[in-house]
Image (tube, rainbow, N blue to C red; front, side):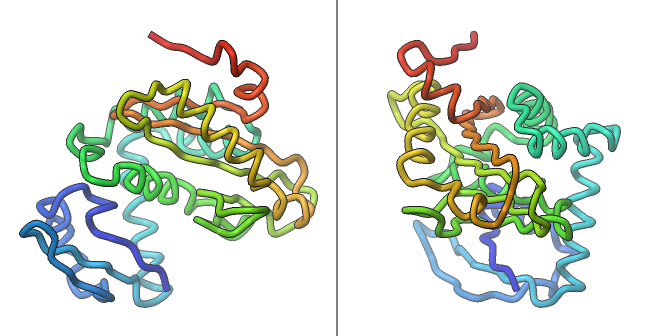
Length: 226
């Protein structure tokens, strides 16, 4: 049973209410009021409903990426550690389905976190996709662990630049976090091979994705884009 926040997935109460076709298919776990707005943590009650939500998100994904091969390409790029292709496909999807006001909330990083987890749901079966799982000396944002040793595994750390911080600085901070906290340890222990350590920075509808080693080796200059 999984718990998610409606605000994280939709960005606004209006779009949360727009999911009325699934009324009764979420169980409230906690309800609170913040600044005059009601915030509810919701749980998917069973496997059947979870499958329904997966299919719904899959339909959104197909609408955002008109050809299914593009969605599959995104997952292939992730498992291959192909940062440039992953970045391009993520940006294409963000431009298509993300509203500019969506990441403007109090915790925009959580929005992107949920967005990525939704994309990775298609890997279930062959991979365990884990969020904020303790690994090494901390908790990685996303771990993609193969169920069968010898398959690739992925560590993905997500960041949103803080005020006054550039995307390059956010990438470097994320890369150092992955290295210093040894987030890849669980994947190595599980027999994943190779292990791809990636960092992704989001700002509105833009995305920057880099391998951790590339960011660290080029720390003095760092990546840049106009």
